[in-house]
Image (cartoon, rainbow, N blue to C red):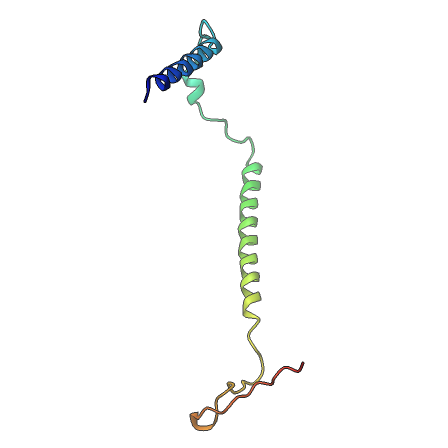
Length: 109
């Protein structure tokens, strides 16, 4: 690093330091008051009635049933693409395992 580069870096460092020191509050603000430790560690009050816990459990059960039903519906959509009826011979298979010649039609212009 040359002397000119070092002076330029020092100058920009001084400008940044001056800017941030100007933006800092003087004097520094006081910390907020500390709350009572017991109030912070005290658990929240349980729900007043069992209706709200029953309602949340029913919502969870309904969402699980919906998830299972939708996965079954999707999987059955892929299984229904199997052919029905009597099986046909594979194209190209002949009698006694001897392959037969398969010709494809030429497209017409």
